[in-house]
Length: 441
Image (cartoon, rainbow, N blue to C red; front, side, top):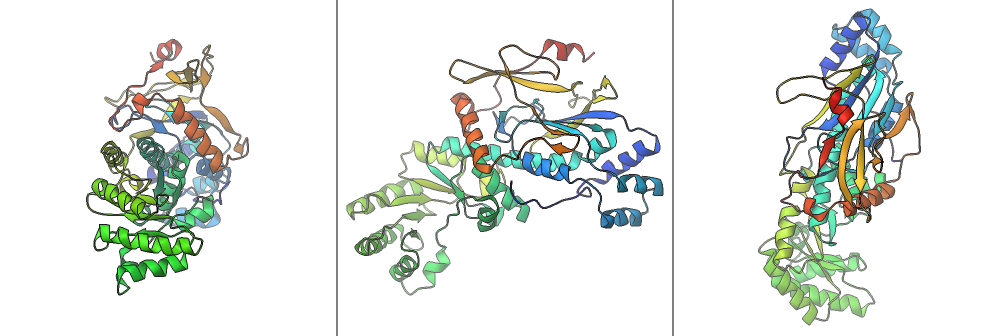
């Protein structure tokens, strides 16, 4: 379990509170089920990778209004005293069903379902959409990069351009879960025990009289983890300077770890740099590349024969540049013993508390999913949603990030490669059970 920082129930849109006040005024406290899922409108993704559940469970276990939060709501003048007194005692008492983090899933499949008195369930909407939505967005983007890299190591370089401090931390966590090898984010390394990785900036090189002097100084400081940025002036000359430094390190019993390319025609330069390193007796020195990489550019570089051993993946992954949001929603599907749905054009929902079942072949490969009613049991298929919280209590220990990483790798391995190419769109077969369709009316 990672260190928990309470957000609190004021992390919400105002209308969640005004609806809660409306329920309270009208004596509406019956149990409701809300379902969180991605609409089948966002065709840039053929699959998604679930993330963010750890934060949700810890927040819900500690869900209550602090005295300071109660005072603020009173000061707004929007709420009556009896409602303020009611939420002063409020805590989350419901049940949570969810796909574990690291699970591959698809549009229209409930990722989380909340069973709780309607006021409690309603107040969670904004937090759940924000938390699950963002981390799933990034984990899915990062997983696509991992698939494109064909086993090459990827490092999260996104921190300086992620949209805020918390986003930077969650990007590091989500990308590591999805298969990245590490992060440049030192705080994320501390909090989540993610390997940290970094080299140098061009400013370090230009602070010295010569490039060679900069390289020698850096190698003296970090003889066992030295990666040299070689494109500040002339990339090929930088590679030759790296050979000089690498040979000196070898004489002292150390190994130059790598060189980094950050500009120019990286494919062509990587080939030339590889030739220079090999000719200089440094065949084990790795070539690391950064600058604008994501699943699309990684694929192009490798298809063109780039001699790159690892990639720094930054901005485009950290903000999911090609698809920077999910059409993720949280809708009530059951209330006070009856199924409920909305019929809004283009935004209709399906009534009923649900389960997602997955059929596998003999090699444990995913074949198809079926969304069914929660009480249904579909023969020969695996249920994906697990009961993870009951009566406001977390049911099992929070999985470690390394465990989640292994689950994500296993899930991605079981998904047919046709769905994992950068150009793949939705196509995995997801159907609705007969009984689920029958109750829609």
